[in-house]
Amino acid sequence: MSAALEATKIERAPAPAAPLQPGRTRRTFAPFSWLWWTIGMLYLGLPLYGTFVFSLQKTRGTLSFAAYTSALSEPLFLRTFLFSNIMAFSTIIVSLMLVVPTAYWVQLRAPKWRPAVEFISLMPFVIPAIVLVFGLIKTYSRPLQLLGITIIPPLTNSTMTTNVLLVAAYTVLSLPYMYRSVDNGLRAMDVRTLTEAAQSLGAGWPTILFRVIFPNLRSALLSGSLLTFAIVVGELTLASFLNRPAFGPYLALIGNHQTYEPAALAIVTFGLTWLAMILINVATGGKKGATVTGVR
Image: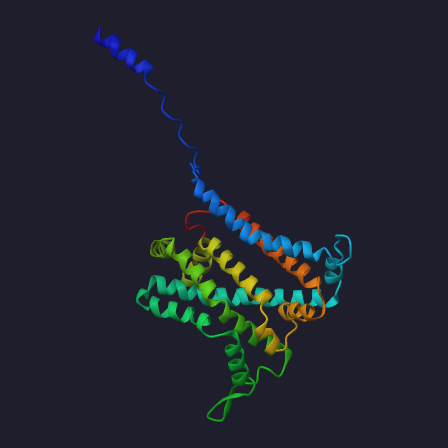
C-alpha cells in the first residue's frame, strides 16, 4: 500500500523547470528601469532629432539633403577627415604600444606603483588642452640641447615633425581613457596564471605580450581605441594652434560661415561613431575567457 502511494506521489510530482540554454540568462526589468531608460533616450535623442531636422531645412519650404550634399562635396571635408583619421589611427597605435606594456607590468610585477601610474594617467583631466599645446610649442619650437649638443631638433619647422608632435599630444590627451580600458581588461583576467602558462611553454616576453596579452585584451583595446578615435577626430584646440588641417578646425570654420552644413556634418560624425560601436560589438560578441594558444 505504501509503495503504491509513493509511486502515485512520484507520478504527480511537478516536472522540473527546463534548464536555461548556455549563454542565456533570465532578465527582468522593473517598471522604473523602463522609465529611466525612456527618459535617457529622450534626453539624448531629442537634440539629435532636432539637429537632423534642422540639417534638412537648407532649401526653403521643403526638407532635403542639400546640406549633406554641399558639406560632403567640399574638398576640404575629405582632406581634413582623412587627415584626422590618419592621426587617430597613429595615436591608437602609439597609445597601445605605450599603455599595454606599462599596465601589464604594473599588474604583474609592480602593483605598489598602481596609485602613482593612475595619478599620472589622470593628469590630462587636470591640465587643459590649451596649456598643453602652448607648453609643447614653447618647448619643441626650438632645439633641445645638452652640453651644447642638439638632442632634439625643432619639431615645428616641418610638416612631418609637427604631425609627430600632434600625435604625441593626442596620446597624452587620450591617456585616461586608454589606460582605464586596458587596466580594467587586465583586472578581469588572471594575468599571472597566463604569464606562467606561457612561460612554461617556452614563450619569451615579446611573445607573451603580443600573442597572449593582446588577444585576451581584445574587447578592452577596442573600447579604448573607439574612445581615442572619437577624441582625436573631433579635437579642436591642439590642431588649431599647431596649424594642422584637421577635421575639428574645419567644423569650427564652416560653423562660422555656414548655417546648415555644420548640423549635417554633426549627424554624419555621430553616425560614423555609432557604426564603429556596432562593429566593435559584432567583433567582440561571444569572445569571453582567457586562453593561451599557439605561443610556441
